[in-house]
Image (cartoon, rainbow, N blue to C red):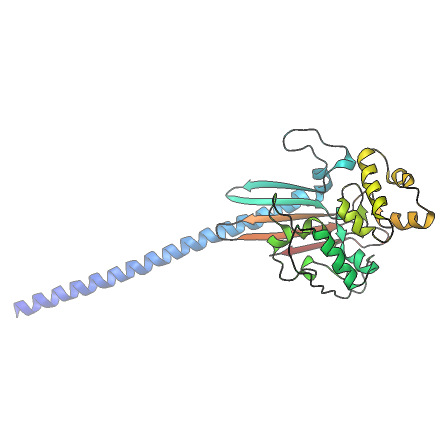
Length: 295
C-alpha cells in the first residue's frame, strides 16, 4: 500500500507540474501578445498624430515653404523662381516621414485638357508628358461632376487613379531622385491654369498645344528665365500674339497659385503609409475644395 501511495503522489506532482507549465506558457503568450498589441497601437497612434501634425503645419504654409531658403543655407530665390515642389524628410519620435509639398498649378491639369480635347487627345497628351519618366498604362475613368459645385473646368477626374491603371501611390509619386511619377507633372486639381514660371516646358507645351506653336512655347520658356522679375503681361507682350491668341493664353496660364498639395509618406518596419492632401482656394470660377486620399 505504501508503494502504491508513493506512486500516486508522484503522478499527481507530475500532473500539477504539467498544468503549471501549460498555464505559464499561456500567460507568457498572452503577455507577449498584449505587449505586441500595445507596441502596434503606440506606433499607430504616433503615426496618426504625426500625419495630422504635419498636415496642419505644412499644407497651409505650402507657398511659404516653396519660397523658403534652400536647406543648405542658400538665400531664397526670387518668388517667380520658387520650385514647383519641395521634398523633406523628418522624424517625430520613432516615426520617420517623407514629405512632398507641391504647387498643383505647376502641373498639367487633366480636367482642363479633357475639356479641350477628346479621350484620344488626352491619352496622347499624357503619353507626351511621360517622356520616359514613368511606365503606367493610361486608363481613363471619368465621372460626372457633383451637382451644386462650381468647377471650371468640370471635375471629371478627382484622382490620378482615375487616369492610370493599377497605379500604387509609390508609382504615382515615384522614387526620387532617379525616378519621378506622374504626380510630378500631372494633376486633377486646381482651376486649370498653369503657373507659367514654375511649370516645366513640357507641361506648358501640352497646356498650350492648340494655341501656341512649338517655337512660341520655347520663347515663352526662354523669356521667363531671362526676365525673372517681369510680369506675365510683359512677357506675353514679347511674343507679339494677336488678340485671339493672347486671350486664349491668358485663360490657360497664371503667375500665382491657389492650389497646393502635400504628400506624407509614413515609413514603417514592414510597409509604408501614403496620404495625399490637396487644398484649393476658391475663386470666381471654382468653389474652395479640400481632398484627402490615403493608402
